[in-house]
Image (cartoon, rainbow, N blue to C red):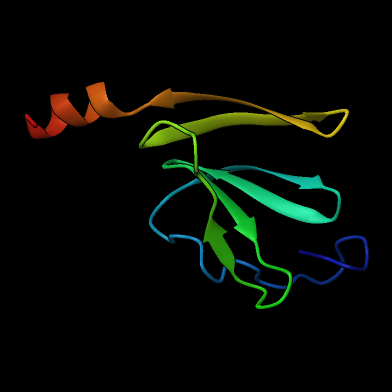
Length: 90
């Protein structure tokens, strides 16, 4: 993140799985949400680290896009079950 229009940057990845891609980040009422290859993560304001925030979502949902409309978060994604089955046979 940057607090000076991109002149300097800070790593805020603490708590996000490093082996997965982060597709997008949205700000909802001063709370950051990150859509990753496996689910959604919420940045904890007290600890500064990211926490899994996927209650009610399908397991292994790759978050393709997140948008906020009138404080409603709209998520599009793709379940990875078929891809996992094709690559692992399980």
